[in-house]
Length: 352
Ligand code: 1HN
Image 1 (tube, rainbow, N blue to C red):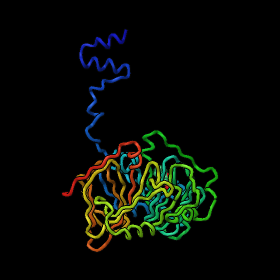
Image 2 (image 1 turned 60 degrees about the horizontal axis):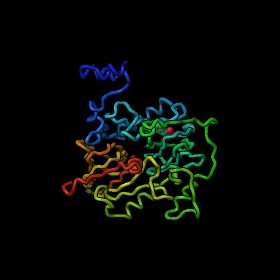
Image 3 (image 1 turned 90 degrees about the vertical axis):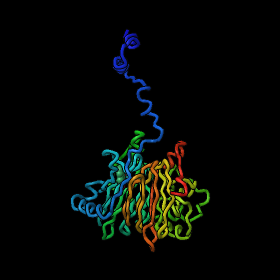
């Protein structure tokens, strides 16, 4: 009997080979690999400069149309993740271009997405037939499985940062996608209609209810974000300067079950206290300039640059200007880690 042979294997190698025939392996050979003292961080801290990427994106605009590409995007690829479509282990980021009179066709998918507008005024993303009008610094959500397309009826190129939970959803084996059969989803509501309903600032329609775990507010205008930050004035945490989370107005929770988004302000010369946490973040510079020390890397950033801050890496941020405020947008996988009881945070202490 074969199992008898396995039990009788004479040498460790013979035993290993024997158990492998039954699609098993000894855990004791690999326990240290499975149970690391701390998470091995594969993603690298890295910076994508807008000055480098913008001309490449515009060249893509000469090579193919938005309709041909479906989405004309340069993906921000983390060099530590070996060709995976990922900016951090769980988050996707990319820069998308849409030229005047183009439409990127309607589709939907199970990964959740948002757009943070980098340049261009007046283009739109349509979500289930509601056009959300873009201005630089606006955050626009396209929740999981919502029909969406992008259009540009202005005369200037429009660029935004896409953030998606693709690596996470792919890891769960839960990616579904579908094109809209009839080309472009018809307009179903007045432009920005949901902003009036859910973005009134501390007020909601009486009895407001909403389907699904995502925020019912699909657009968070930059004007409101900037006002909130400037009115707060003093740092809200020593680790992040003045920081606000974009929340679901019905729950006060994150915008998506898988991703949260933030906007923060560093005053001239401000230096944050070093810390680390399980969540990974993609950071995007709205305006200003500064430096972030992440692990061993020193990333010097300016307006419209994007950088990856892997989970569980010590990091601190500094506004290098003596006169200008620095504004950073960011998104993370924190809601997943928190809900699974996996979120941890450590403070490096006053020495920072
Ligand atoms: C997607 O659907 C969009 O709708 C952008 O604009 C980026 C990256 C990966 C998968 C789907 C979009 C995407 C994406």
